[in-house]
Amino acid sequence: MAEKNKKPWPTKKAMEQVYKMNLWGSNNSKFYSGDGSHQPKIVKPYIEVVTSFLKSFKSPISVLDLGCGDFNIGKHFIDFTKNYVAVDIVENLIDYNKNVFNAANLDFLCLDIAKDHLPAADCIIVRQVLQHLSNAEVQKVTEKFINYKYVILTEHLPNGDFTPNKDIISGQGIRIKKQSGINLLKAPFHLKIKGEKQLLTHTLEKNQGIITTIIYNL
Ligand SMILES: C[S@@+](CC[C@H](N)C(=O)[O-])C[C@H]1O[C@@H](n2cnc3c(N)ncnc32)[C@H](O)[C@@H]1O
Image (tube, rainbow, N blue to C red; front, side, top):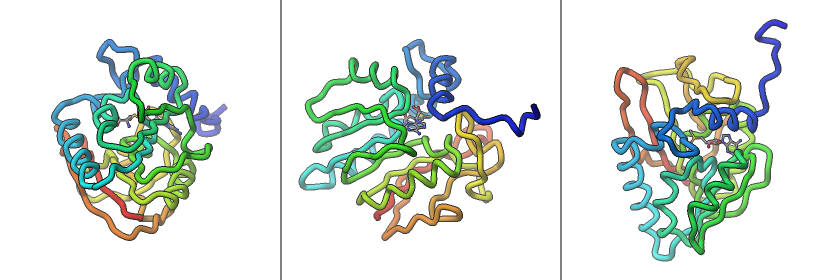
C-alpha cells in the first residue's frame, strides 16, 4: 500500500510509542516530555510568567492542564491554584504521575482532549500539545475553549513569517517540518477571543524556531 494511503495510528498509540521509545529524548527517568519541558533557559522564564499570572488573582483560580506530560512544569503551579487538574492521553504516564506528585488540590486524569468531555476550570494551560495534533483534533479541542475564561497556549513555531495551520498527522512531529505552526485565530480554527497578551517568546538556537506563549481571554 502506498505510504499516503496508510491509516494514521490513533493519537493514543502514537503518544504511547513516543514515551516508550524515548522519541522526545531521555533523562533516564521513566517518562520524558522533551527538552522544551526540561531545558532551564526555556522552562524557567515560562514558570515565572505563568506563576505571576496565577498569583495576580485575589482568590486562586482553578486550572486544567491539557497534555500535562511528565509534569516537570505543571508541578510548579499547584500551590498557586484553587485546584489543578492535569490530563494526558497516556495512561501509564498518568498512573506514574499520580504516584509521584501529591497535593490535596491536585488530580490527574487520563483523557483524550480531542474526544473526551473536559472538566470545568477557570484557566486552561496547553503547552506544546496542539503542535503535535492534526487540524481535525486541534479543531475539536479549540471548540471546547469557549467554556473557559483563559487559555495559556504555548506553541513551537517557525522563525519569521509562515503559513499557519498546515495539516499534519498526529504524533511525535510538529508543523515546523512543513514550515508551519499553529495560529488558532486563523483558518480553519477561527477562535473567537476577547483579548490576548503575548507572555513570552524563546528563540531556539540554530534557526530551530521559537517557542511562544500567549494568553487568550475568552
Ligand atoms: C510535548 S509534550 C508536552 C508536555 C507538557 N505540556 C509540557 O509542556 O511539559 C505533549 C503531551 O501531550 C500529550 N497529548 C498529545 N495528544 C493528546 C490528547 N489528544 N489528549 C491528551 N493528551 C495528549 C502527550 O501524551 C504528551 O504528554
